[in-house]
Image (tube, rainbow, N blue to C red; front, side, top):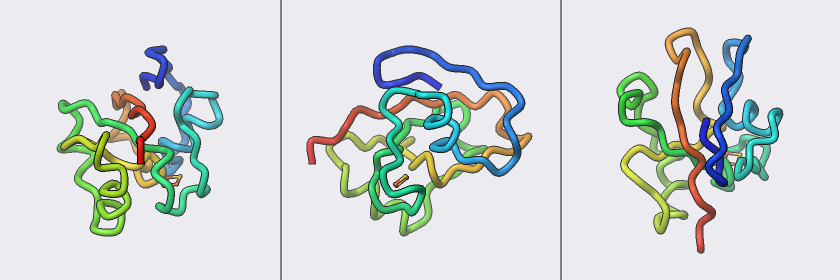
Length: 104
Ligand code: FES
């Protein structure tokens, strides 16, 4: 995970089902706030998924997309909310970058 200041973080022994937001918060990743606690209601866990991983991570559902649309000024085609991406063995090695704060 690349943080908002360009620092990189790798995580080992990641338990299945933990969200990217939770991982970021636990490990003090700059830019991952998670203000709503994972309720898909704040977008302070916004990340850009590395394009190589997009097919495995998948697109946001309608509720998540609507929240991302609130931060459209910094949204990209590979945007996801970190609280909505749950880690699994299939995502071992996943690369994401924390999105900059929205001006919204
Ligand atoms: S923690 Fe609020 S939308 Fe992810």
